[in-house]
Amino acid sequence: MDWTAYVDNYCERIAPGLWGEPLNTVSNLAFLVAAMLIWRKARTAADPRLARTLAVLLGLIFLASTAFHALAQRWAAAADSGFILVFVLYYAVLFPRLFFGVRPRLAWLAAPAFIGFTALVTAVFSSIGFGSSYLAPLLGLFAFALLLAFARDHTLRPYWRSFALAGGVFTVSLSLRTADHSVCGSFPPGTHFLWHLLNACVLYLVSHTALSRAEQVRPRSPAANRA
Image 1 (cartoon, one colour):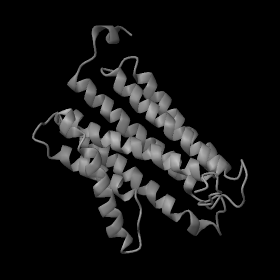
Image 2 (cartoon, rainbow, N blue to C red):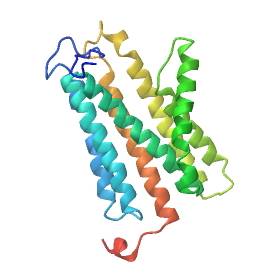
Image 3 (cartoon, rainbow, N blue to C red):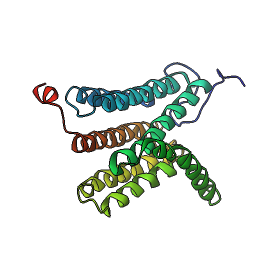
């Protein structure tokens, strides 16, 4: 396999070249902004390691997606999809641990379970002409919202709104990603850059929500309160 092969997946790109997708490339700065905002929270967070981990994962998405849209090569496309998957799997494991106190050894089972769920959802929707690996994370956000909305622990219930909002924004984002090629004739830049902007909001929101829950589970130390 030629990992440097040219990849042309988006409306905005019409030829190889470093600056073939200016909007798709620059819009990735939204991920960097999200990463920086989460990183700053590490100074006063109840769980600084969690904040830094989430920030680093956001930063890796920024780097990989920027490289992909700037270079349009197969290795960068793989890195782009790969780091998004890493974030999703990390959060799938984090959610049961953080919100329901599941032991780490059991929580890690969420990663292979989610991969299987993604394969199933993609296969089912592909049969009706709408196959996308991003449908599983979308359904996952709404599933998280439902689990929290009906949780026995009343302290969990307020968090459902954050995941429902994230799911709503991600629905719009995925719709815009899907519509990219269909609008080329009327809007040559396409809509993929809006996918970046909205996804950065989604990832910031779920990261912020995780840190808020960590604050509730493990209050800040006196040193953090003085920071």
